[in-house]
Image 1 (cartoon, one colour):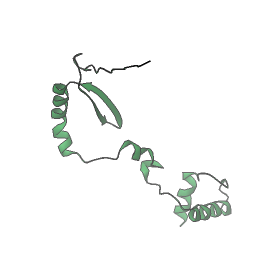
Image 2: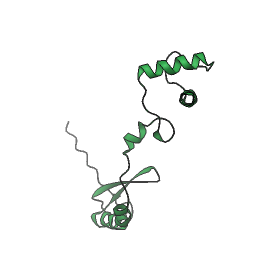
Image 3: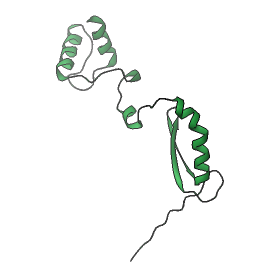
Length: 113
């Protein structure tokens, strides 16, 4: 049996027919809105002065890969992890044999070195 599925976009502003889904983000939150060509143009024109003065940020996937506060913690090599674990044990810090090392221990190690 054949099946035909059709998706019809409805303009989220005026309820008319929409031609596209516009995606944007503000304050770290992504949004999508279905708009007609006319309303999409209005949105882009309204945002144009802000976009032209802004700098490009990281994509959502890049932000999701960050570690630590503000993304400042660098990825550690196995050797560096082993060194921090040995230091932590020698200085009576609780640290597991495997897995992520707590940021507080990494900070204490960095301060000591």
